[in-house]
Length: 78
Length: 245
Image 1 (cartoon, each protein chain N blue to C red):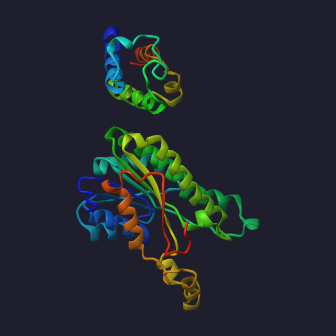
Image 2: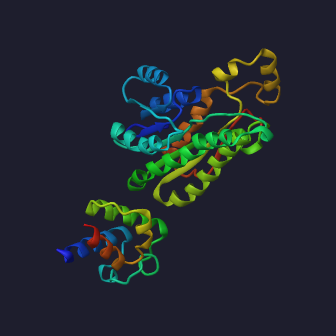
Image 3: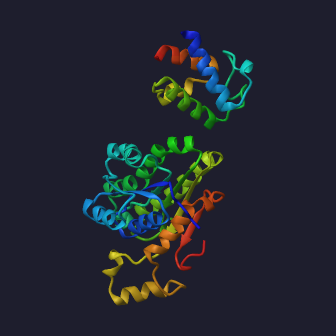
């Protein structure tokens, strides 16, 4: 089940940022490695909220910098 | 031209002269309109005149919780908010030296902070839709200043600065944020002026007359339209030439 979460997060990232799947690794920074701008990261968080039916508060959203951060947060909050 | 069929617009201050004209213009172009304001009777009357595609959404813009809830209520009523017109405004005029904190704060809250809250509230939907229009109804005094209106002028100038900053942030998502800055507009408020006072005002205006609410509505309709997609972060002054900015 947890792998499933990781895969769903990865799909959202691929979809939103238009990057290759194999680039989306745990320590990949959305902004530094995956070409996101700051607004893209806001949209990604919105997409995660909808995909997983959770609410990600602004301060938590700011701490989600990498793909691994996102997966960790979502696993802990679903 | 200016076809808003299928678009939904939320207009604050729709119980006032300019707000009602804006709502009427957007509705006339095919938009579904959400009429917000504090006074429910004029909103119901306007909705009755417009007929279909008009929703009454009363809201006290000095109440933070009510303001934060308004975008959701509007979305529930209309399905979306594609266009937001921050038109509501109050004045609490006083000489700067006599202006109380309360006079300052209440005007900033209703005119500027509510525009911030509402813009934030509708942004998520606009980002997802990759389309959105925000039009802030500012004022000529936001650009020129006016004695006795430090609070009002600050709020109206603030709406411009906010619009420009937000315009930068969301331009790549198909969302435009602009302001309309009316000069002197004939409304029930200006009807109370004496003929002598009116003549004095008219003499300051190259066009030789006050503007009509419909003329502010027309500028707003343009900025809300698909045709204005490439216009963002700008201020459209509608003042009969009184200040050529």
